[in-house]
Length: 293
Image (tube, rainbow, N blue to C red; front, side, top):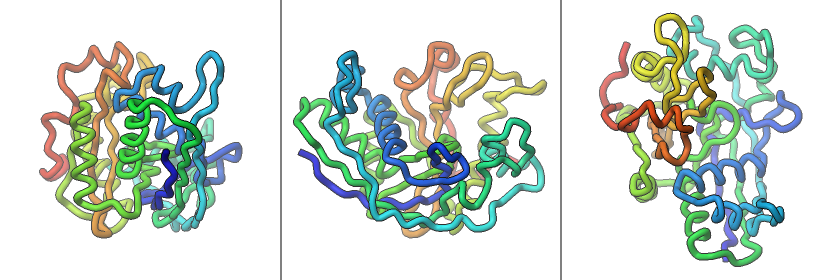
């Protein structure tokens, strides 16, 4: 039976809100949703998901209790607004900066304010308590999902583009190597830079350079130069598809490193997006090279 606390830290700003979209907090429902995503991506079946998270035709309760405690928020400080909507950093921050506003201009969305974003260094403790036994297969998948969340988890807005990154406070180089092996064994592709950063917007700018200068040049998001298409990088048209590629910084030895992982297409993509690829987007990319200009 699982009963444990895990101390977490926000390593990039987090926009995780409830009914009041202009006020961020760490919500157990967001943690549960992230764990459920990892459970599916790691190979959990629909039956195992119901065993682990509840639901189904009989609306069974989850055997796991998720609680958040010791929440210590940190202010995000001055919000960075790039000079141009087409700068690398805006590729990461633009949609977050207009979120919640139908006609908001860049950096003017109702959620883009000091209260709407938790700053780096925000800490909390995740308490997980198992209330009843479940089959070993589902239990092992849940434990694997906790490990993945502790190293590559994200919650809130724009989690596939670097915001809302949460990481276990005791994560180490060795624990990342163990988690990377777990994920690659389950069909994930992982790539990372060898450059380190001290501040969050610098590592997200590096991510933006790769997104703007490389990934979006190959897989368009729309516009006359590169029409939108259903791909693993995500799309709104012709079909709505969340990205299987997560630009997800990690923190090691108090330094931030740009990294990215790609979930198995068969677990997270719809048919149209799966048909666009014969190999993972990240398979032949090398983030130790300088980002494209």
